[in-house]
Length: 185
Image 1 (tube, rainbow, N blue to C red):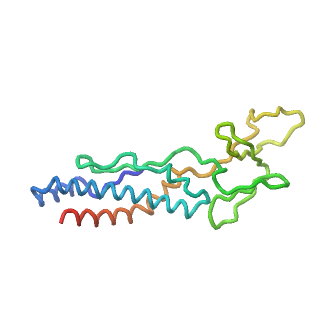
Image 2: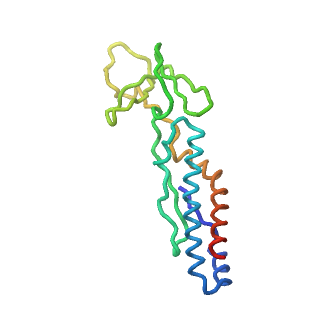
Image 3: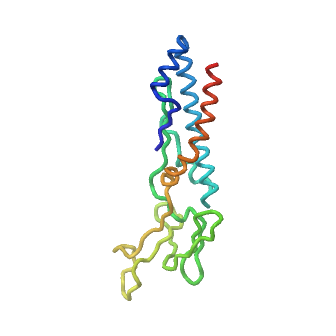
C-alpha cells in the first residue's frame, strides 16, 4: 500500500493563505492532481510488471486505487493484492522425463524443477505446479496430504509493488505537480 500526497499540510496552509479566497480551488486542484498521480503509479507499475514478468496483464486487476483524494482529505491510497501468485500464471511446461520448466522473468532462461509435476486444481481447473518434498516410498497414500508436496508460487503483486512504487512514484508525482500548478493559474 502506498499513500500519495503531493504536498505537506504545513506547505498547503502557506499556499492557501497566500492565495486567500482561492482556497477551495487550490484544494480541489490538489485533489485532482493527487488522484492523477495515483492513477499514474498504478499504470506505470502495471507496465513495469509486464516488462519484467512473463505473466502479462496479471497485475492490472490486482493493483488498484483503494481511496481517492478529496478536497477535504488530500491523499490517495494505492493497494496491491497480498496473496501469492501461483506459478502456473507464468510461462511453464511439463518435461517429458519428469519435472517442470518454469520461466518467471522475461529475458531469462528460467529453470527446471526436477521434483515437480502438474495437476488440475479443484478450485478453478487450472494447472497447479506441485513439488515433491520427500522421495516416493512404496505403498504411500495416493493423496496430497501429509506435507509431502507443496504448491509452487511466484512473487505476489504486492511484493513487486513494494519495490516498483519507489521507481515509478517520482515520475507520477512530477506530472501531477505540473497539472496542479497549471490548474491554480
